[in-house]
Amino acid sequence: MSDKNTAQYTKEAKWGSRFGYIMVAAGASIGLGNIWKFPYLAYGGGGGIFIFTYIIIVLLLAKPMVEMETAIGRHGRSDTVSVFEKISSRWGFVGWMANICTIMINFFYVVVGGWVLRYGIQFIVSGDFGDDPELFYQNFISDPIQPLIYSFIVLFIVVFLLLFGITTVVEKISKVMLPALFVLLIVCGIYSMFAAEGALEGLKYYLLPDFGKFSVKVFADAVTQVLFSIGIGWGIFTTLGANVPGENNIRKDALFISYMDTIAAILAGFVIIPATFGAGVDVQKGPALIFDVMAGIFKNLPGGRFIGALFFIALLFAVFSSLFSFIEISVRTFEIKMNLGRKKAIIAAASVIGAGNILTSLGFGPLKGIKLPWPSFGGMEYYGFYDWFDCFTGYVLLPLGCLLTCFFVWKIWGWKDYEKELTADGRDGRLTRWDKAMTVGVVPVFMIIVLLNVFGFIK
Image (spheres, rainbow, N blue to C red):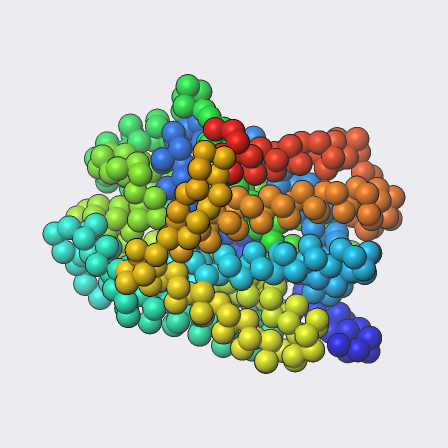
């Protein structure tokens, strides 16, 4: 893309308001990571001890990483590759790695979004999941055709809306859907607390930490969930940051976005885990957890069908809100670095993601027997498509992205220039020793622990 086109792109890309940017950024963060993945990790990870660990990690990790990525994006005013190259031409590979990570996350994110659509429709139409909700779930995800149809519907809607431009459509939708999502989560949580048998015991399990259950695995899962849920390490905030006006206070925005995302995750657990615990559902349910719980418990409660429908509508809103920004990362890179033009870039990104959706979806059915190798210190392991994509993105690419970003800010960009962009040349405070310690020490150590754990060096 020419300098003239780049300048015009940058000029038109700014958000209409600070509130609009925060809603879009929070909307990108709040999605399946909070409402689908967080509850099953928390439930299987010991409940209260996972929540305790997660909150500590958010306090230490989230704000500095969102600040760094947003500052890089605002300084570069371009796609997630070019923003690194503007500071150092040799560091564009960090942006390319973020693009690969985002595309691979979309391989399974869109598929699970299709599941959400299917369950939402089922609750609205009849609320009937048969005598065995688990069998309904397994029959659905293992079907070679149905899940793909719903996944492609989700992908088509997102792609269609992206053709209208992120700053005109996503901002308007997010201003409405994000507050509605919080309200619906609160309503569902209160409802499940009073209606589900054994919910109070489940609430104790969820909120009270048992420190005897702490492990390196719990810590690693909590770290990667923070990265996945908030959207750190894979280009979201470098892409969105390119649109942030100079008058925005990046530090305040980062704090607000991090806290909103965490509140949404905790609320989602508040909806799911008490009802799950009271029903004695297996803690190893994993990705099936919210689908089995909502189908098996809420359909039998007074008004449960209505609440279940609201829950999946809210979750579907969150899916769309996130996918707008996720796919935009690759679209913007293809548009600028490959000179494709916006429409061709959208089609190219959607085509690659759609191919990955086919692999992931069929991996729960006809291709279930195909396993991909995973190197481990204890010996080679083998994962299905979903588990391999999830492990490679969440436990390798995201931590590497954070490690490289920290080093980039510290050694390549330098504290002085970073502080100038972050604080608007001193208008919004200064870079403290604490900020530097997080960048040089705490965040990298967290990432190294995750990497050592996923390859079996520490348990």
